[in-house]
Image (cartoon, rainbow, N blue to C red; front, side, top):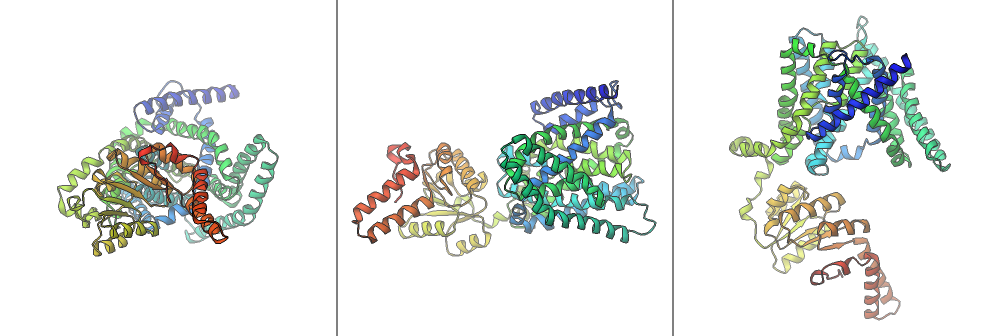
Amino acid sequence: MEHVSLLNTIAAALAVAFLGGLAARLARLPAIVGYMFAGIAISPFTTWYGADVGTIRELAELGVIFLMFGVGLHFNLADLLAVKGVAIPGSLARLGVVTAAGIGISAAFGFGMDEGMVFGLAIGIASTVVAIRALEERGDIDSVPGRIAIGCLIVEDLAIVLVLTLMPVLASDGSGGLFMPTLIALGKAGVFLALMFTLGARVVPWGLAHVARTGSRELFILATVGGALGIATGASLFGVSVALGAFIAGVVVSETETSHQAAADVVPFREAFAVLFFVSTGMLFEPRVVIEHLGLFALTLATVVFGKSLLTLAIVAMWPYSARTSLTVAVSLAQVGEFSLIVAQQAVSAEVMSATTYNMVLAVAVASITLNPLLFAAIPRAEVLLRRLPAIWHWLDHQGEMPDIEAYPIGHVVIAGYGRVGQLSGSALSQLGERYTVIEANLPLVRRLHDEGITAVWGDAADLEVLATAGVSAARALLLAVPDETTVLLATRNALSLNPALPVIARASNGSELQPLRDLGAREVVVPEYEGGAELVRQLLITIGHRKEEAQEFSQSLRDIQYGGYYEAADEATSNRPG
């Protein structure tokens, strides 16, 4: 009977999860909302079905392991360091304030300090899945606000690691004081980390590489999944939670040469068991508890949706970003999701959090994730409203220091990226008496250009608002001298959406970008490596005695080969080759 119960429970969970996820996507809501409502639908607290919650919770542990393993696999320190100035202090300040608010809310409703602390941390952590999905759908994932939001999410992921490490300390009765238990917990975690980043960092890559050489996909998947589960469960020997163990396992695997294949192979397991995690979360939801504590629910939801938004807005506004950037980051982090639920479930298991508080976290997660798309849709209206409040707008929008759009020249050239390539182009245009506007992400450089009488706009060249501010709608041409591939692709697409007839000359970092840029509508694409190689060959041929005309012709033939007929595919009227 237990076997039948297990199969029935899993079958029911996956079936209702599919229906709930499909309904959520049709309603343009994150699928997570549908999964949690699916769990509520077969919960013993709401329906006659009475699914086996204990069975699903055991399987949900696998969901936690694979979720955290995936976070570790995609953990990118470079993404954090790129925006460390705002992401690290901003995230820590926001978590600190929201945690304090959580302690205050808990105290007001009669809960203890430890429970209030975990509650505050849980509602302070945004949903990585929801935030990244929303940014991807808006095309903002690689924009300035997208990078800041991802940097903040990485800091919060690291905060989760610390919380999970100290959860056993919070579970103790505190009779012997917190100093020694905290020290012991950190010491055990330190030993685990030291072993993983020394011995594990050598053994894991060696093992995966040898399995990969067998050519067996099944063995490689087994090694990856088995290794993740083994490290996650083995972490308990050091008093470390399986969630933290899975995260560290992912970080170690991410540094191997087989990490991309490992990440691809783990995705089906992560998605399937993550669905069970969200379903199990919904199955533990007791509507009665929320109804009995509507005041607590309303206050917590308001703290997450409005309190966190305003706090994030104020924090990001302390750095030199546009109002749109601050608003986008604020909305991206104005919800709680999967990792908040992981913290809450771990706290319930450790008897640090009561069922009432857990239900609040779950209810607020469902409500805040549901409201998040509406907040994104409200950003343009919020901008209109804020522009009517000059003092607040000037405080939020640091681009207000730049010239008004009316001051920009008409029929000008826009240069995106003012590094060595951009500066060379600008100098040439100046000598020829051509007018141009610069888009540059380096604010001190923009201010210096203003002092030199050069029109410049501070911001991300991939951003529609920045491109519009630079006047691409009335520009004669756009030169994309930015070295970042994603920025060039997004800038090409967005610039042509504003001005379909705009000639775009784009810099490509390698040949693989030629066709995508051409498909997007770029008029000319130049690969510096190709140009440099062709010129080196020309100079070499001249040096060893070939005629200049012959060297030039041979150099041009090399370009034709390297560009693979790209320029021959362009319209005849605009197919001038570089060089």
